[in-house]
Length: 165
Image 1 (cartoon, rainbow, N blue to C red):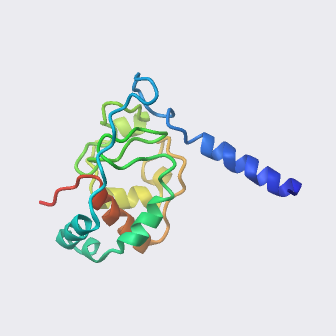
Image 2 (image 1 turned 90 degrees about the vertical axis):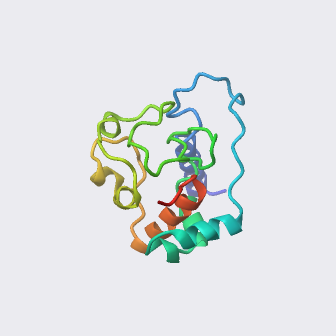
């Protein structure tokens, strides 16, 4: 292995280590003591929910949304009962007040943001987290392509217990 390859591997490992499961959690349970996460919705359930969403989300590409979420997976989980990691578990995020999940330590910026998460707020956040809400602790640089954000938001709606209406 070349020195450059070894250095790249070391940097990559350090980045992943920073997104470990203990980063933002306030839980005091011992490792492995968390309740098992609920299963993900079936493809048919996800497609039915997708069809019920307003435009442009009802035309989203869920496969691309899932690929986009891969950028988030090292810090966030989706299923009900999933653990907090460096970032909070995202189940139930739509309609929830920013910075209010009881078992997660948020930055002061998120605790005092004063809004509930909806598709529009999440789109702004995903485009540029630091610019959208200065002072937050999320290190992610954002999803720059609007279509990728639409697909990601639709995917999140189908995976996090969102109920239309």
